Length: 185
Image (cartoon, rainbow, N blue to C red; front, side, top):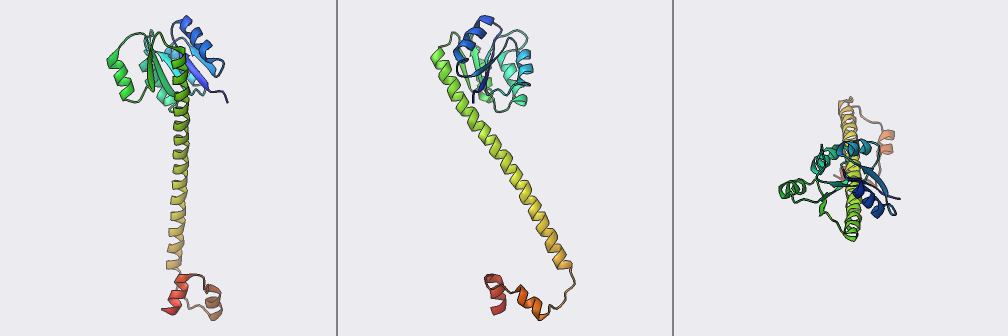
């Protein structure tokens, strides 16, 4: 399976360069702006997004914040040619950015970062699926508990009739310790 990665940069030269770095191993989706990226994210299941920080209209961090609702498990990498330390610290501390890299980037370092980001993506996706399964099982357990409570309520509200001997023998199961204990007790 080829993962989809998205590259967002307002400089076409950077987009083409980054696309060449990744196109052999991944399906690459490119966008020249944050708004274009958001539109494409509605159509593509992207595992990793690599975005420039400084772009007109929307910064990379603003884009990352807005992608959370669309693709919560997507891993986000920020490229920056500037040292806007406070913005980077904020993005990393609130869990928006997996890693940030500086321009000019090292292709090998970027490839390795994306490879690790995909491992993180798989882990997050598995965690999400397990959480959904856990939620489904809890709901089912609640249903079973409610059905059991209804059954117990029906049994306790039924009139007390003395069972005949045939019913008593049919109900006897020596493998059930509670029944054996009641008979012995």
